[in-house]
Length: 188
Length: 68
Image 1: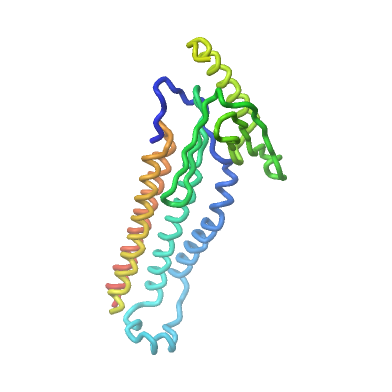
Image 2 (image 1 turned 60 degrees about the horizontal axis):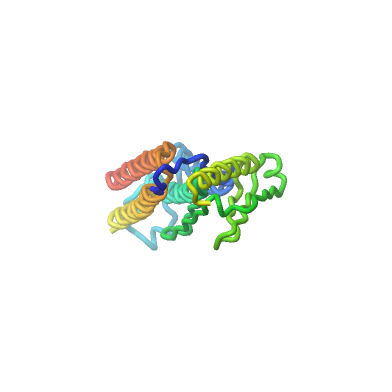
Protein backbone atom coordinates (compact mmCIF):
# COMPACT_ATOMS: atom_id res chain seq x y z
CA UNK A 1 0.00 0.00 0.00
CA UNK A 2 1.28 3.49 -0.80
CA UNK A 3 2.01 5.21 2.49
CA UNK A 4 0.87 8.75 2.86
CA UNK A 5 2.42 11.30 5.21
CA UNK A 6 0.59 12.15 8.43
CA UNK A 7 -2.26 14.63 7.70
CA UNK A 8 -1.94 13.98 3.97
CA UNK A 9 -5.31 13.77 2.24
CA UNK A 10 -6.05 12.39 -1.22
CA UNK A 11 -7.82 14.89 -3.50
CA UNK A 12 -7.74 12.98 -6.73
CA UNK A 13 -6.71 9.61 -8.20
CA UNK A 14 -6.19 9.52 -11.94
CA UNK A 15 -5.65 6.58 -14.22
CA UNK A 16 -5.41 6.47 -17.99
CA UNK A 17 -8.72 6.76 -19.85
CA UNK A 18 -10.81 3.55 -19.90
CA UNK A 19 -10.51 3.50 -23.69
CA UNK A 20 -6.78 2.83 -23.30
CA UNK A 21 -7.57 -0.22 -21.15
CA UNK A 22 -10.19 -1.41 -23.66
CA UNK A 23 -7.71 -1.04 -26.51
CA UNK A 24 -5.09 -3.08 -24.66
CA UNK A 25 -7.62 -5.73 -23.65
CA UNK A 26 -9.38 -6.04 -27.01
CA UNK A 27 -7.16 -8.80 -28.52
CA UNK A 28 -7.36 -10.87 -25.31
CA UNK A 29 -11.11 -10.34 -25.09
CA UNK A 30 -11.67 -11.42 -28.70
CA UNK A 31 -9.46 -14.50 -28.27
CA UNK A 32 -11.25 -15.36 -24.99
CA UNK A 33 -14.67 -14.99 -26.63
CA UNK A 34 -13.62 -17.00 -29.71
CA UNK A 35 -12.31 -19.79 -27.45
CA UNK A 36 -15.59 -19.97 -25.51
CA UNK A 37 -17.61 -20.02 -28.76
CA UNK A 38 -15.34 -22.76 -30.09
CA UNK A 39 -15.77 -24.78 -26.87
CA UNK A 40 -19.57 -24.50 -27.03
CA UNK A 41 -19.51 -25.45 -30.72
CA UNK A 42 -17.30 -28.47 -29.96
CA UNK A 43 -19.89 -29.80 -27.50
CA UNK A 44 -22.64 -29.92 -30.11
CA UNK A 45 -21.11 -30.62 -33.51
CA UNK A 46 -20.25 -34.16 -34.62
CA UNK A 47 -16.48 -34.59 -34.79
CA UNK A 48 -14.42 -36.83 -37.08
CA UNK A 49 -12.16 -39.53 -35.63
CA UNK A 50 -8.42 -38.99 -35.10
CA UNK A 51 -6.46 -38.47 -38.35
CA UNK A 52 -4.25 -41.37 -39.38
CA UNK A 53 -0.98 -39.42 -39.30
CA UNK A 54 -1.62 -38.55 -35.65
CA UNK A 55 -2.56 -42.06 -34.57
CA UNK A 56 0.56 -43.38 -36.32
CA UNK A 57 2.64 -40.78 -34.54
CA UNK A 58 1.01 -41.16 -31.08
CA UNK A 59 -0.89 -44.47 -30.99
CA UNK A 60 -2.01 -43.98 -27.38
CA UNK A 61 -4.07 -40.95 -28.44
CA UNK A 62 -6.74 -43.41 -29.60
CA UNK A 63 -7.56 -43.96 -25.92
CA UNK A 64 -8.89 -40.41 -25.74
CA UNK A 65 -11.97 -38.84 -27.30
CA UNK A 66 -11.20 -36.03 -29.71
CA UNK A 67 -14.01 -33.88 -28.26
CA UNK A 68 -12.93 -34.05 -24.62
CA UNK A 69 -9.26 -33.62 -25.41
CA UNK A 70 -9.97 -30.51 -27.54
CA UNK A 71 -12.17 -29.07 -24.78
CA UNK A 72 -9.48 -29.74 -22.20
CA UNK A 73 -6.75 -28.06 -24.26
CA UNK A 74 -9.00 -25.08 -24.94
CA UNK A 75 -9.75 -24.73 -21.22
CA UNK A 76 -5.99 -24.59 -20.53
CA UNK A 77 -5.70 -21.88 -23.17
CA UNK A 78 -8.60 -20.02 -21.53
CA UNK A 79 -6.75 -20.02 -18.22
CA UNK A 80 -3.63 -18.56 -19.81
CA UNK A 81 -5.62 -15.83 -21.62
CA UNK A 82 -7.51 -14.99 -18.42
CA UNK A 83 -4.24 -14.62 -16.50
CA UNK A 84 -2.65 -12.44 -19.20
CA UNK A 85 -5.78 -10.24 -19.28
CA UNK A 86 -5.47 -9.63 -15.56
CA UNK A 87 -1.84 -8.74 -15.91
CA UNK A 88 -2.94 -6.03 -18.35
CA UNK A 89 -5.66 -4.87 -15.93
CA UNK A 90 -3.12 -4.79 -13.07
CA UNK A 91 -0.72 -2.79 -15.18
CA UNK A 92 -3.48 -0.30 -16.01
CA UNK A 93 -4.90 -0.13 -12.50
CA UNK A 94 -1.65 0.38 -10.65
CA UNK A 95 -0.31 2.94 -13.08
CA UNK A 96 -1.85 5.96 -11.43
CA UNK A 97 -1.37 9.55 -10.40
CA UNK A 98 -2.50 10.71 -6.98
CA UNK A 99 -2.97 14.36 -6.08
CA UNK A 100 -2.93 14.98 -2.34
CA UNK A 101 -2.99 18.17 -0.30
CA UNK A 102 0.86 18.08 -0.19
CA UNK A 103 2.18 16.48 -3.36
CA UNK A 104 1.53 14.64 -6.61
CA UNK A 105 2.48 10.97 -6.66
CA UNK A 106 3.01 8.71 -9.65
CA UNK A 107 3.34 4.95 -9.44
CA UNK A 108 4.02 2.83 -12.47
CA UNK A 109 4.44 -0.89 -13.00
CA UNK A 110 7.21 -1.63 -15.50
CA UNK A 111 7.28 -5.33 -16.26
CA UNK A 112 6.42 -7.90 -13.63
CA UNK A 113 8.93 -7.05 -10.96
CA UNK A 114 9.88 -3.45 -11.55
CA UNK A 115 8.06 -0.48 -10.20
CA UNK A 116 8.61 3.26 -10.41
CA UNK A 117 7.42 5.54 -7.65
CA UNK A 118 7.93 9.30 -7.85
CA UNK A 119 6.43 12.32 -6.16
CA UNK A 120 6.77 16.09 -6.22
CA UNK A 121 5.72 18.54 -3.58
CA UNK A 122 3.27 21.19 -4.72
CA UNK A 123 5.74 24.00 -3.99
CA UNK A 124 7.98 22.67 -6.80
CA UNK A 125 5.30 23.06 -9.49
CA UNK A 126 6.04 25.90 -11.91
CA UNK A 127 3.49 25.36 -14.66
CA UNK A 128 1.01 22.83 -16.01
CA UNK A 129 0.35 22.27 -19.69
CA UNK A 130 -2.19 20.03 -21.38
CA UNK A 131 -1.84 18.24 -24.68
CA UNK A 132 -4.80 16.64 -26.42
CA UNK A 133 -3.90 15.03 -29.71
CA UNK A 134 -5.98 12.91 -32.07
CA UNK A 135 -9.60 12.25 -32.91
CA UNK A 136 -10.63 10.04 -29.97
CA UNK A 137 -8.82 12.11 -27.32
CA UNK A 138 -10.53 15.25 -28.65
CA UNK A 139 -13.99 13.64 -28.71
CA UNK A 140 -13.67 11.81 -25.39
CA UNK A 141 -11.68 14.57 -23.72
CA UNK A 142 -8.55 12.81 -22.58
CA UNK A 143 -4.93 13.71 -22.98
CA UNK A 144 -1.54 14.29 -21.40
CA UNK A 145 -0.91 16.73 -18.61
CA UNK A 146 2.64 18.01 -18.10
CA UNK A 147 3.79 19.49 -14.81
CA UNK A 148 6.95 21.56 -15.16
CA UNK A 149 8.85 21.50 -11.93
CA UNK A 150 11.74 23.30 -10.33
CA UNK A 151 13.12 20.15 -8.75
CA UNK A 152 15.26 17.32 -10.04
CA UNK A 153 12.35 16.01 -12.16
CA UNK A 154 12.05 18.59 -14.91
CA UNK A 155 8.69 17.25 -16.04
CA UNK A 156 6.01 15.12 -14.45
CA UNK A 157 3.58 13.65 -16.96
CA UNK A 158 0.03 12.35 -16.47
CA UNK A 159 -0.49 10.22 -19.56
CA UNK A 160 -3.84 9.84 -21.38
CA UNK A 161 -5.92 10.89 -18.39
CA UNK A 162 -9.60 11.80 -18.65
CA UNK A 163 -10.57 15.43 -18.00
CA UNK A 164 -7.06 16.93 -17.90
CA UNK A 165 -8.47 20.48 -17.57
CA UNK A 166 -10.32 19.63 -14.36
CA UNK A 167 -7.19 17.89 -13.06
CA UNK A 168 -5.14 21.01 -13.70
CA UNK A 169 -7.63 23.11 -11.74
CA UNK A 170 -7.49 20.66 -8.81
CA UNK A 171 -3.67 20.59 -8.80
CA UNK A 172 -3.49 24.40 -8.84
CA UNK A 173 -6.04 24.57 -6.03
CA UNK A 174 -4.06 22.04 -3.99
CA UNK A 175 -0.87 23.99 -4.67
CA UNK A 176 -2.48 27.25 -3.54
CA UNK A 177 -3.68 25.64 -0.31
CA UNK A 178 -0.29 23.99 0.26
CA UNK A 179 1.63 27.26 -0.21
CA UNK A 180 -0.80 29.07 2.08
CA UNK A 181 -0.24 26.43 4.75
CA UNK A 182 3.54 26.60 4.33
CA UNK A 183 3.46 30.38 4.71
CA UNK A 184 1.31 30.02 7.81
CA UNK A 185 3.75 27.51 9.28
CA UNK A 186 6.63 29.81 8.46
CA UNK A 187 8.32 27.37 6.08
CA UNK A 188 8.17 29.78 3.16
CA UNK B 1 1.58 -42.13 -20.85
CA UNK B 2 -0.93 -39.75 -22.46
CA UNK B 3 -2.76 -39.34 -19.13
CA UNK B 4 0.49 -38.25 -17.49
CA UNK B 5 1.02 -35.65 -20.22
CA UNK B 6 -2.50 -34.29 -19.70
CA UNK B 7 -2.02 -34.06 -15.92
CA UNK B 8 1.36 -32.36 -16.38
CA UNK B 9 -0.12 -29.90 -18.87
CA UNK B 10 -2.87 -29.07 -16.43
CA UNK B 11 -0.39 -28.60 -13.59
CA UNK B 12 1.84 -26.38 -15.76
CA UNK B 13 -1.10 -24.08 -16.64
CA UNK B 14 -2.19 -23.89 -12.99
CA UNK B 15 1.39 -23.18 -11.90
CA UNK B 16 1.61 -20.39 -14.48
CA UNK B 17 -1.64 -18.92 -13.18
CA UNK B 18 -0.50 -19.27 -9.57
CA UNK B 19 2.81 -17.47 -10.19
CA UNK B 20 1.23 -14.61 -12.13
CA UNK B 21 -1.67 -14.47 -9.62
CA UNK B 22 0.77 -14.19 -6.71
CA UNK B 23 2.59 -11.35 -8.48
CA UNK B 24 -0.74 -9.58 -9.15
CA UNK B 25 -1.81 -9.94 -5.50
CA UNK B 26 1.60 -8.78 -4.32
CA UNK B 27 1.45 -5.65 -6.50
CA UNK B 28 -2.08 -4.84 -5.37
CA UNK B 29 -1.17 -5.29 -1.69
CA UNK B 30 2.03 -3.29 -2.00
CA UNK B 31 1.16 -0.52 -4.43
CA UNK B 32 -2.56 0.11 -4.43
CA UNK B 33 -4.00 3.36 -3.15
CA UNK B 34 -5.10 3.36 0.52
CA UNK B 35 -8.81 2.61 1.09
CA UNK B 36 -9.44 1.85 -2.57
CA UNK B 37 -12.64 -0.24 -2.82
CA UNK B 38 -12.11 -1.05 -6.50
CA UNK B 39 -8.80 -2.85 -5.87
CA UNK B 40 -10.60 -5.48 -3.80
CA UNK B 41 -13.28 -5.83 -6.49
CA UNK B 42 -10.70 -6.31 -9.26
CA UNK B 43 -8.93 -8.99 -7.20
CA UNK B 44 -12.23 -10.74 -6.43
CA UNK B 45 -13.12 -10.91 -10.14
CA UNK B 46 -9.68 -12.35 -10.90
CA UNK B 47 -9.96 -14.89 -8.07
CA UNK B 48 -13.48 -16.09 -8.96
CA UNK B 49 -12.72 -16.25 -12.70
CA UNK B 50 -9.51 -18.20 -12.11
CA UNK B 51 -11.21 -20.67 -9.76
CA UNK B 52 -14.01 -21.21 -12.27
CA UNK B 53 -11.61 -21.92 -15.14
CA UNK B 54 -9.44 -24.21 -12.97
CA UNK B 55 -12.58 -26.12 -11.97
CA UNK B 56 -13.62 -26.42 -15.62
CA UNK B 57 -10.12 -27.61 -16.40
CA UNK B 58 -10.33 -30.31 -13.70
CA UNK B 59 -13.73 -31.48 -14.90
CA UNK B 60 -12.48 -31.78 -18.47
CA UNK B 61 -9.32 -33.56 -17.33
CA UNK B 62 -11.44 -36.00 -15.33
CA UNK B 63 -13.71 -36.57 -18.34
CA UNK B 64 -10.68 -37.33 -20.50
CA UNK B 65 -9.30 -39.78 -17.97
CA UNK B 66 -12.64 -41.45 -17.25
CA UNK B 67 -13.61 -41.87 -20.91
CA UNK B 68 -10.47 -43.91 -21.64
